[in-house]
Image (cartoon, rainbow, N blue to C red; front, side, top):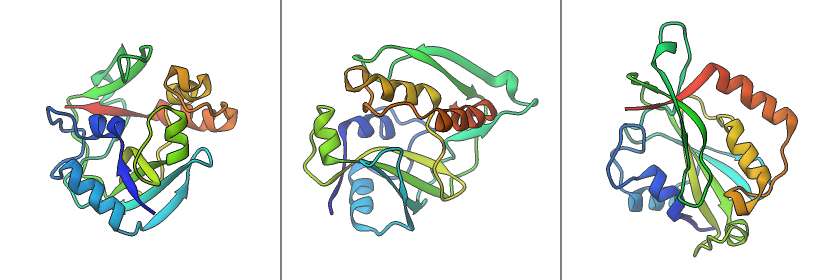
Length: 185
């Protein structure tokens, strides 16, 4: 089984101008090589048959992806309408500014099958493509953001995967994201 870094994930995990909330101390090539060659601590089922997650101990100084919302930091939350790519419609997102989370204990690598990536118009030269990575304190998945679930349900033409909305998973996601938010330096 071969695993490769997709252009979509490369741009998000390793932006040209390095940011504190992306993968640190590792090049895209070294990351891809390590994920391809190192056996994961665990393999988790993804939200659809074409998705799986590989859990690895964090070997970098990458910080946790999310921060709990508290009364002490709620005033640091920001929001805006943003699109992930030029082709996608902007959606409402929120994040913290002015916080620094701890170094993550785990990197949870999100993989899509080559067949799914081909369907989405992003063919790869491998069996599995890295489409994202979660930086966590526990070896488990952070719930997908509600807006991502909705985008997926809209289909490939709108930047999603075409997986119908699971109402129970959506409610679990809302419960998590009401209590947590991403952060930006």
